[in-house]
Image (tube, rainbow, N blue to C red):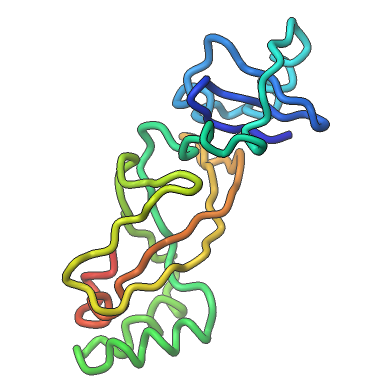
Length: 171
């Protein structure tokens, strides 16, 4: 089962068929602890067939409403080593190593919903950055109760030169 946010509303894909959910706001829907069960239950009643958002990507909106976007630390040793090298001249060479040894995960605010760009949209790149790179990310939808209720892929644009100047610039 897949869920899409489109300019027509929330669309559910089940077994290759697409259905528009009426009376459902994206924010209320994605805040549900029982999202999958709720969607399955909604599809038991009368169904409103919808056009496939995949066939018409211009219908797709970014899969976010008013939520915030948060990130969780560095993930690979290779990435850790590269970040340590990049921040060494700024005195932050061991900051990334500390993330790997820390008891708590590194969590940091990335942006508000209006900064998120959907499929095919243009991303903003900082004018004061000279080294900006896209970073594919696993993106999780986490309910207010902390339950992972969905996932998708994301593309985090990073300004590596700015991040390397000072670990506090990471967000």
